[in-house]
Length: 429
Image (cartoon, rainbow, N blue to C red; front, side, top):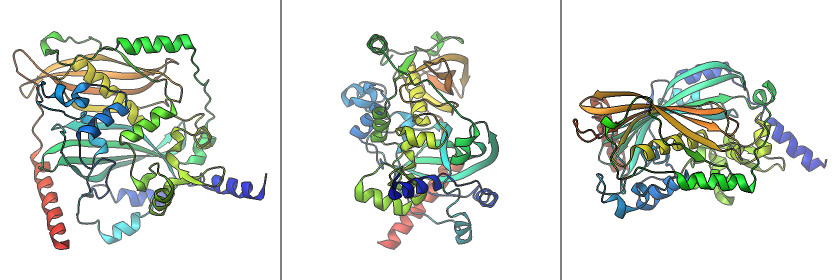
């Protein structure tokens, strides 16, 4: 090995040596309960005809309600809407008051160098997203637990709440994300995971393509609550076999583009991003700093953190399960809540089947509600992700599905945050 290669290898090994510090945990606990205006843009700051279509396409959803304005105009929505889960990738920065200086200094650079996994989320929706809607949010940490993991030893489980609202001050969604922080070195040493990489014959690919051709979307055909029974199953859909291309298409649709957290970027932009968030860029074996996100397409980096091969974003499977429910309920249903967990990895080459079962029926606040259990299952017959959904359906006796009223406390807080944003903008004018 040359001297240059040895130096690069040393930098690479140092990048996986960060540890969970007790003082960081204590400092992070002080952030709980503090909320602030979200000051960073997502890939999309405003919904548009094309961005809505492209986001749906990024996880394999060709629903014309999201991609064809002419079709959408003839539905109950009278125009194109976004998949509700697209709220995750839209944010326009707000001006707002900063956290107290002492708290900012104490919590700067927490958990630097630790690997981060998204292990699940909880959603509640209140309004649709339409072309022309700007989405803002205020954010804050809600919880932090220290747990022992089979995969990585001591880990941190952090919950962040994003309250998302549009330019009219209407609450769109409450989005709670569960993050797992793990020591990269411990993850590599704790347990040696191995898999048999998936390979597919021409005949198997033909079977997969035939299954895709037979997937059905309910569309304009109304599904009435009265016609649904506990124990009914949704039509299964499949996703994959997963490729690095599919992962990058998901990026192109808008996921994970914050420069602080290591978005994929090129040349000058990549260099400037590294200056903003150096902890999110890890040298590769050639010594070139590259996004830590590359665990999703770079087998070598995935193995460096203890995983046998590159794997998907857990958020992709959240979108896939969302897709399955949307196909089943048709254009007239509304997903009110989604709670999901990602339990196992979905590696490049894997094929996932998404299935679901009706677990309950009820009338809540005057409308017809159905609940589901949904899961993703790989070709290894491993259940890799799980979700619970609450859906409002049209009813012959109770009328059309509708979104719930926003909590008054949040409506008032949104109004105050928007007013403060305008005040600060006017002061700078």
